[in-house]
Length: 527
Image 1: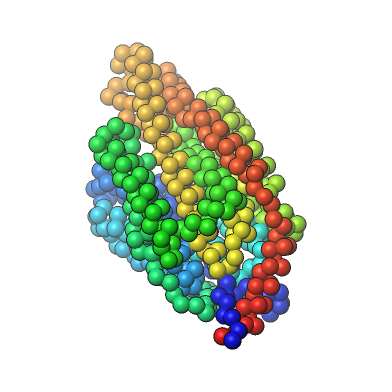
Image 2: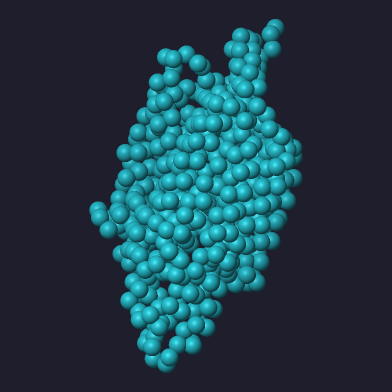
């Protein structure tokens, strides 16, 4: 009897007749990536209007936190489940969940239902990001995968930057609820593309026992970490019983998770991932990129509004040099990797440029010209574009197709945790420094010059309308509060650079040959 081997899913074929279906599938998967990326940031500029209409200022932070928390928790779960049951069904479920959350959000009449909607969106959104990348890895050979992953990276990054701009436009135009309603036709398009063009993942082996305990423990650990980063220093003091309890809970959950995974039949984060040198190195570098990217993206628009006096929409437009640079370099690097089969140089160069961009941004002064700030943002965008998605490609190149979903999910999971930590830690330091600096500088102003104005009641419009003698100390406080923090991130990015320097490059042409041999053997073997 001939041995039965598991298949790795539908490996890509070179026949021209299959090219059209691959393109159509790619478009559908791009839409899923777009929905997930926009979901993280599109409501940021709409929040003041939303909390005003729904009377929920005290729950405002949860509109953002609920999505991030839910999506981060389920990332590794989606990756493992899709490796067992196949991408097609699980991806359709994720899109449907995101659509249900969007409908509830569009109809929400109070903050409680809006937060529930964001949780449901997040439960679907975590799968959209992971499964769109894993599905492309199933149908595109490693040598060609670079150009597709480059476009994925560009879409994710552009939407992350453009989300606040889109949210502001919708809020000022048809209304903030359209930030939810716009997802419905996009979700329908994505589902149709997946149903028609993504072939089922067939496996000729018994389904292993699902690691429910491991999933629960990683969900608990992730929840605790995200809440510590979100609440610490803002909602609760760092030394408060709540934060200390969450930290202790996270440590216990991580230890328990590690012990459970060693004995699980089909662990959600298998140990062999962490035995792979390139996986460990690139995942560490991805975490550093996530901290740098989202730590900057979260607060540069506020800085721009306050220091330059522009509106929220104009601040979003001033971020476009970063977005454009990231878009071009992500696509170009993917194309070059596809042509040459070599990838290591891009994240090395990218992390150097990213460090330079952060350092340059930290040198800005309140009277620096806007074009100089935009130039420095573009430098940062180039660095992220050269590194972010190529690091995911390296991970996918390390593992066979049957576990590529698990590997992709793990890499994205740690990057998302890095993004959450970056946003929270930068925000905490920025807020604390800003309040102290504003209090100090405003106390030195002439008596009565600030009227009823307080350090916590400043808006861009209010600051822009103040006389120079009051406005200049305030914008100096913003400058001194945020920009030095960006310089503090540089050593972390340089650690990522050191990690990548130890990556052992494997030519993608060799990987393609191995994939084709595996696919040929699997297709010709019967029980």
